Image 1 (cartoon, rainbow, N blue to C red):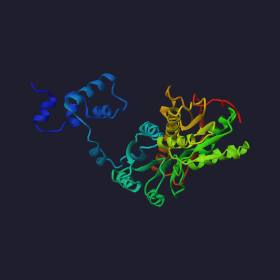
Image 2 (image 1 turned 180 degrees about the horizontal axis):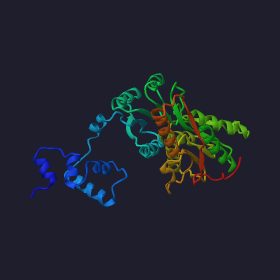
Image 3 (image 1 turned 90 degrees about the vertical axis):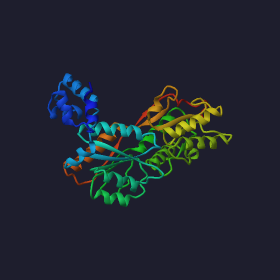
Image 4 (image 1 turned 135 degrees about the vertical axis):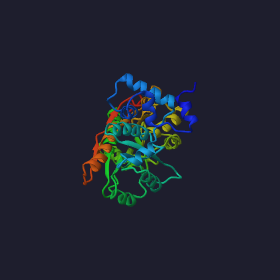
Length: 345
């Protein structure tokens, strides 16, 4: 005897929510609550409806649902695939948006997909606001014009474009914490691998230099060129290894950079932290792994996401018109990649 899914297939019909309700013996509203993971139905009913939906091969037609809505309640998120912090922010955004009954639509920036292209794509998908994660924004004027139509929020940077909100970490203070920790351990020859023009890099560079000068270490200030990738850390390590006199500590641009730096040093027989202490930036998941154990500056991605979503909803639901720039205080997470130098200068 054919089952419910077979009957629908035989009729050439895609199962609907009404089919699920009829097969389960419940109302369409109950099915809607269960499939939308909304409160109301008891656990037994919920399990029964989900089993029937699976048996029927039912899949919600999200596009049709959006067309029926006056509002999409979708927030578009632009992100890159190269920054260690981005996945953590994206994960936190999903949770923060869900709590306020909004959904997230992702669009990645790639060599073949620039900011303008991804923005236009998200607008075409009826996103009501845009969230930009740590981008080196290439067209702030364009985004300023977009912000005249829908809310735009930056995470991890503040370009100052008109009408755009932002939430970021105090990167100057983050670098100050890292360098202050190294100086407190007794280090004097401390180098910094720069993040170039990427978000937060200028502030981290300024914080590094400021603390070194405050402690009379101007002669030991050295900024090595780099970015937020493992290869930039490896390049910096090779530059250091080409010299006879190594620094005793390095502040890397971010955790990925620190990873490339440490791996290259270890392969050359330079011990971390025995010969060189290394500090990263971001406190990514990998930094806390037992075999990495990286001292790093922690950025609170949960709070970043909360502020970004709140910023969108304040503009969408409460008609807030003034721009905001939220600056969060970083913390230093001390692990095993830093220790006192073998001998002070």
